[in-house]
Amino acid sequence: MNLVTIQEVTLFDIILVWIHLTAATFWVGGMLFLSLVGVPLLKKDPDPSSAQRGFINLARRFRTLVWIALSLLVITGSILLPNHVDLSTSFGEWPPAVLIKLTLVLLLIGMSLAHEKLIAQKVRTLKEKPTSELAVVEKLLLRFSPVISRLTLLLGLAILFAAVFMVRF
Image (cartoon, rainbow, N blue to C red; front, top):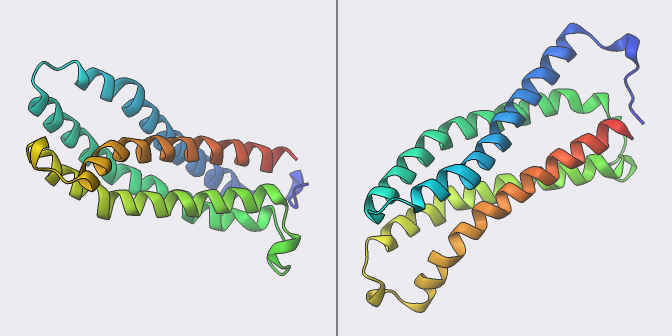
């Protein structure tokens, strides 16, 4: 059940929703592009070091734009939140779809920060070492790193599903 009626929707609300949807489209669409097009294409490169440089360049450019999109999503989502919940009530009284979406967003931001600030830098360093010199934990990190990207994509898709559910029910 939405708190906003059709008569209360303003041009400002429409613009905010448009910005929110555009940022979400860029963010999830970009992740889908990287995982379904970019990575498979780079894996076909006969020169692994060239492919790695290509992916790093692609990811760096995308990363900046992703953080802009995520910032826009948090800002516009915060402004639009009162359209879906009464902020004077406790969280326990908020619709479950809103709470699920907010929880998924926090998980996504946490995972994205951990991946960018901790894991990605370490993985880049480890990929420069010969495999024979890597410790077991380092080898596990190299294998686990792509899983984090896939989990981030799944979280993004889950957030989209929660958003649709939130505005429809």
